[in-house]
Length: 349
Image 1 (cartoon, rainbow, N blue to C red):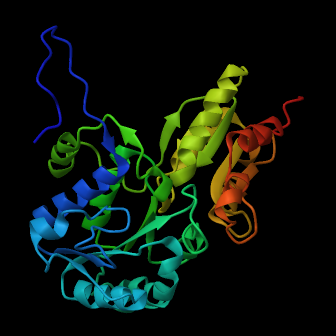
Image 2 (cartoon, rainbow, N blue to C red):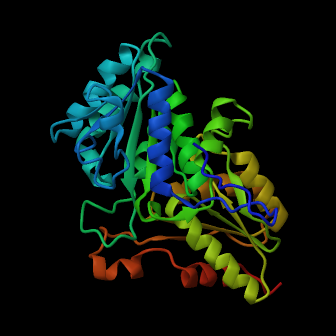
């Protein structure tokens, strides 16, 4: 049923009821289960409980315990079972409760899920989606707030997606489930309760009728600007947009590019923005050393060196284990840290 309301007597177009990021993910899973009997959802507490963040709420009741079910607390077993199911033409969507909880499954992911297609010379595909709630901003303790995207991005054979908007939460999860390649799908925990006026029924129709061009692997310009580009993804996108709004009040025009997909990486959109503005700040929550942010800087330098008016700056988490909840506000990229980096882009000339 559409979320659009009946036309108002004044004839004005009615407002769309806000949907949350979590609702978009839940709806995407339900629509994928309804569209394809090969899709199954499983993981720790995803059935009766509906997941720690309730992303799978109601799926077992609607589709039954053979389509959405709980597993033992054994992440390597969850991933290994997904391999066998995918090899037998199923499309498993597995949930790791928290980012750091996925580490016991990493051997299965790196050694088998990422390599099976190449190992079999293309004869075997593994259409597996590994959903990982990640990053900070919720006051979580150790093992609950890691930004572990670099491990997976460094592993050839995996796609790595991370949506930042309600619309992308729906569309990108549907794309991930339909992909014949394994996808690590990072969900920013602090965005689960964010809202936007999005008609999820209309998104379903658009996606299933393929009305829009598929955007898999494509970045988007979330805010246009002229003076500098902020390159970011996932949980840092709202912070970057807030920084751009604050900079506008100071007379500086910042463009914000939401990368959306870490692997594949959209060099074309990134380079076009950098060549327009000539200055760049890369923002990410993960520690900066040997990070996705470092890779982005390298790609920008290689492709846009002669367009740069200043060295590329990074605003990232610090190179320390994730801090206690009382200290995370000092660890995470903030509007002030981003604006300080922008001020450091050699404007004197």
